[in-house]
Length: 328
Image (tube, rainbow, N blue to C red):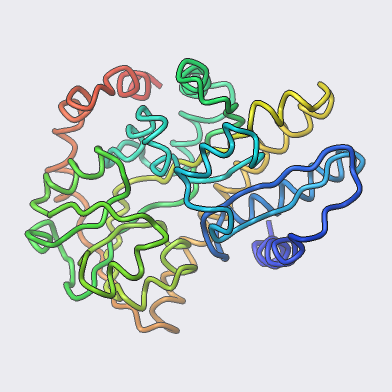
């Protein structure tokens, strides 16, 4: 898969946000991130695939970089049907789907392929979260879960070679109890900051440390305010592709299949592009942006964090999700 092709396609279609095609149905897709990023590559793929396979009966418009708002608000808009579809990390959805917090548990998966095998199409995990959507009355349909990169730690001033270097640092977290509990276990001070406010928070010292995928770190230029990167690989970023029930209900059955199949294929692309980004971006960050990279022995982090997995799951009422993932 040629990442460059999808990157520039994403830029092109994002720039055409004002002119929808004459079509039977129009779908607006939200992403929160800036390119290059797997989510925008996935959105570009969805546009190309859905329009082609629907015979242009569906026109897709992409709004990346949070143009339509921050994720928690966008989820509400998708539920209302004013935004049709979104691609984002599950950690940004925990306000509406608290069960998604399980995916920020540290060292839960051995890698992206392992993660996709456990949460991908046809798995008990996917079926479980589809039912969660229904039970919570979100008025959204989960099209697919996928894996889109490792998440790593970065700091404003501290070089991190092991857990001891984290003590007392103010750690940015999304609105996820799992994140807060995890970093507190490493003697950090959790501070909840929205993704769109993260650059300013790191710049002003509201937060001193953060974690993200490498594409997110690069695309949002967070290396400018957090130039010390520690490759902890503590979580595999799990993403969701979700569609409004109202939008889904308008589509005839044959077009629902087109959209569903495209979402599954887009998640496969997400794993592929994320793997490529992760392998290429570290070199780029060092060579072009002066990022200082450390490669801590993750065994020290695993030793602290793995034993608290079951306790964290029980404390946060995620025992069912934890047991389901461990059974795969």
